[in-house]
Amino acid sequence: MIPFVDLKTQYASIKPEVDAAIQRTLETCLFTLGDEVAAFEKEFAAYSQAAFGAGVNTGTSALHLGLLAAGIGPGDEVITSPFTFVATVAAIYYTGATPVLVDIDPATYTIDPAQIEAAITPATKAIIPIHLYGQPADMDPIIAIARKHGLTVLEDACQAHGAEYKGKRVGAIGDMAAFSFYPGKNLGAYGEGGMLTTDNAKHNRAVRMLRDWGAERRYHHELKGYNYRLEGLQGSVLRVKLRYLDLWTERRRAIAARYDTMFAGTGLPTPFVRSDVRHVYHIYAIRTPDRASWQEALNTQGIQSGIHYPIPVHLLPAYADLGYRQGQFPHAERAAAEVLSLPMFAEFTEQQQDVVVAAVKELQASV
Ligand SMILES: *Cc1c(COP(=O)(O)O)cnc(C)c1O
Image (cartoon, rainbow, N blue to C red; front, side, top):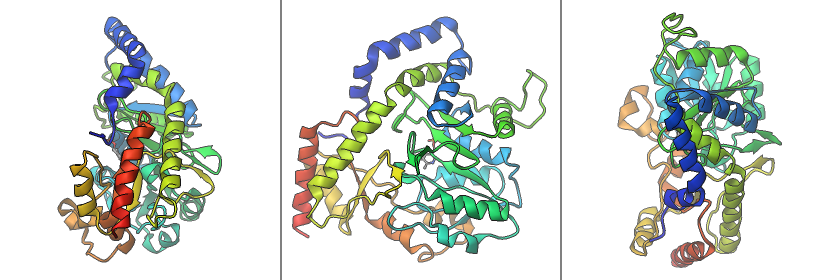
């Protein structure tokens, strides 16, 4: 079987260091926040070229608290795109604000800046561009629009640890960025985790308070907060894994380049990458109108694949109340119908990749 991701092989490659880090935390008994989390916050913020990092329990919480730190609440509107994991839109709902959707650029799958201004109303307070699959959204025009209209830009960087836009890491290109350390992400905890990065000291302070019941001093609650703390064990594991992230990312990029080369000339649509970004390939997605039969054929040969994501948010039953219709975001809808994610992880071997490429090429040849 060729897995879509292989966390066991990765653990085996770093087991002594991870086990020692976990042991250390067990002995200090600093299970929520604590020294390891504080150290990881500094290290990950530096890695992301941001002044501050606030560890939280999930990427979803980082999005939620980032919006709250910007003062967003009921009556406000937040712009994002429908081709994403549901968490982006859910986090907007958590604040009481209304999500307003804008279609994607069909080449990069990220929000189309040219369509943002038409969606702005007097109630608009923020834009959440999603660095989908590990490729940064086109941030310059997004930030220019945000400045013109006085909006906050919160990057959904949950799939984009270490990605770069015009030479700068994602994390503080916008006002804030939300990262996820869900196990399958490019930097994954051994459980759940997330972080809000920013250069803005006020936003950092607000998120640090909100994640821990709205108090800086215990029992002196200044804000209505949450229990969104990052666990000490996760902090200690993430510190070990962060030291390998660049190595793993370079492996992902090499695997992507090899897929591109091996598929060249077959007519298969491979990922479009902007010339001014460092794509970190959380996902390597091809496109085919015959996706269901391709996925089935791959499955029969023991090759796992994925679909990120089969239904755009505006067509999900849970968000029917947004009032959008089929046909309203044609690029997102078409991408959702055609994308197919191939195995992509740092430990993927060339032999495994050869098997995947041969199977996909055979499917493409029969089109
Ligand atoms: C994973 C992910 C999230 C949510 O992160 P969690 O840690 O699972 O809460 C949000 N947005 C995107 C684009 C993601 O991929």
